[in-house]
Image (cartoon, rainbow, N blue to C red; front, side, top):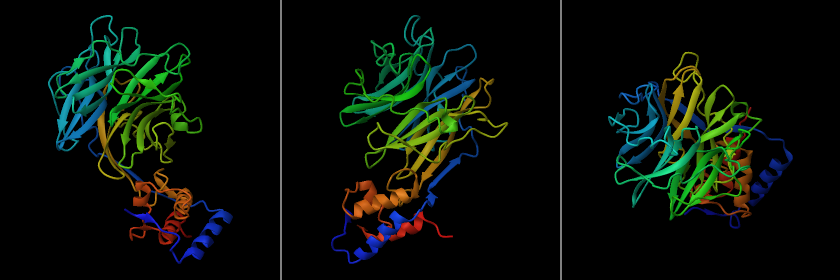
Length: 394
């Protein structure tokens, strides 16, 4: 394992000089480390059967045994939204089953009018799906279904497992769009809620059974930023990925009242989030494009440090009822990005100084990305290189 070496480093004076210069100079340079590429053939997935020929939304993908498995919501004219399933060898060309794999519930049930955004976990007991059910009054709540193979599903007989909250709560009118994964013996969920004033946010809960959920006292943990024009109205539709160092990345939708676009945030604990300065990472399309007004409902699969394959929903105009699924790839260059905010700047320099001075202990992730010199040490050589990287010359 890489280690922090300061006490035996003969270059202590150089370190002190750099620290002094950083403290007294007004340095604000940065080098972005971010690239998103949309697939040139988007949309890559349209409904091909009678039940989903009009619209596909809310992709959720697992990569298992060299196969991409997608669950999605779809509908056609005069039919309710239901959940379908498709597989792919490359994440681009999809083969779907001929009929929905999860149907709406009977009249009067919490999911009688439609099934929307879902999340799927595969653990030793089989597949579990938490999905959004819509009742006859249009209320969104979260239900649970289980499956031995990801195709044949049985709904939990006491759904919903996450109902709307009590009067005055942050999710009084809606519990929607779960994103779930399992760490050890616990399930972790991020989901969307709305209060009686229509304010929308993303909350967090955990459960040991997948049925009884304990909400965070800090909910909602992600809300819109009035200083970010692209998400002033609300944030929604989260998809959370856990990284190798134990931290989290959230992809989410932001809405400004007209356009829907996709952003990204990082967190070390799943509660406190730092939004990417590159937001929105997937913007709405150009006039006349398939996603002219909407890029929404993201889903990500990590393909190694800083590399993601993404799927999302697009729609041309507010008057269009045709929705489809697009795909793209995201590269977040991590070398030197010790703070995990998808850019290399003075914040990373200060973080590296604290590690070298042993004011803080480096995480495994920081030991990986902080070794710019490539000598399996975190020391002054790395700091000199990081300064050069983060503060471009004239």
